[in-house]
Length: 310
Image (cartoon, rainbow, N blue to C red; front, side):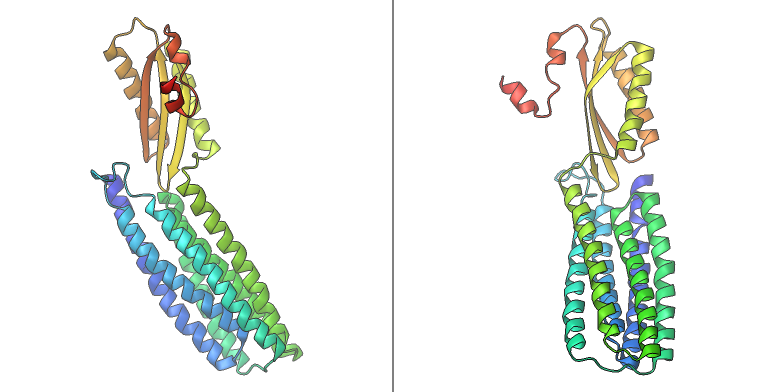
């Protein structure tokens, strides 16, 4: 219940992101209208993707917070990967739009006006994004939410984009070289493409049931090794997978053949408790086997179906 409540509380971060995005879009659009800078326009367009991504995150976090049910026995956490995937796609779309606009302006350069006021507005918008991004990334790490982390990293990309645009527009005003403005926009678009690619890659890996990080697997192994040394048992066929904030761990536990079922069950309960304390949000599966049965050592391959057919 505590975990479900914590997951449900993440929705408030999505609302924070939506509110900040609306304000920032208004500020950056105003800065563009004042200056006519295509660099500031590219910055504003990226903030539009922030808003759409924040709305998607709100929907997905609401779904992910639902408890397991009959049709989704393993929970709804994987919905978060769809959010980060959509965000990655939107980032790429924004990059293409920015590049198209920048190339046209590069071929037909235009002067920029009202630089001082426009840059001041852009700086205020960037500070808002910076504050919200830090909050989202901290919450993402605390609750192991890829959606909040993706949103936070996207906003940080927006911050660095804005820094580059502000510096570039200032340089245009000082040098009078108007082609520098669209050139900066193209560099911004290239950076956005890289950010979007990384988000899409992470989402794809999550949907493919990638194993938990090596550091977390090492924690599980340390716990199993401690029980092996204490009780004379063995373990094999350790399998792990990550589903957003939830982890799934399965292992075969080999115990002396003379142990009773109750003895083996109590050992498994202890192991599960220690693993779940070390890695909160873990669902633990075990398969109990006797040490003195040769078949116990013949089912370690990944594809158990082939073993059963043999």
